[in-house]
Length: 80
Image 1 (cartoon, rainbow, N blue to C red):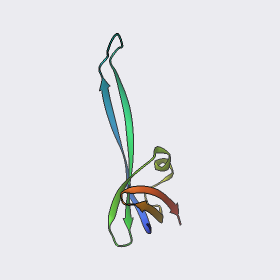
Image 2 (tube, helix red, strand yellow):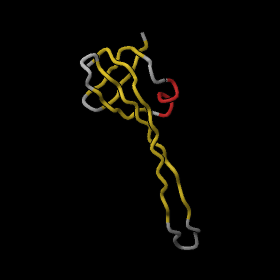
Image 3 (cartoon, rainbow, N blue to C red):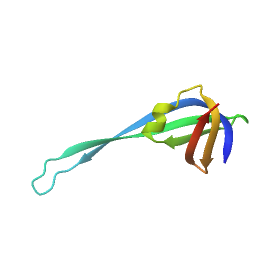
Image 4 (cartoon, helix red, strand yellow):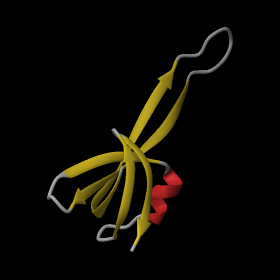
């Protein structure tokens, strides 16, 4: 589905994962970041979709264009 939309917000969710050591390895922590962008359609409805870090870097609040998605899966955004 492709609709006219505007980016109204962006957020990054940082998670820290603690791993116990085993058989002689030291415990360690890994960090992962999940990126989300909220789009507002012409109808006023808003939808928050998970995007890649690369896409997140390209998208800015206030951008308007064509949002393509399938269900809750982000597929692309083309600025107009």
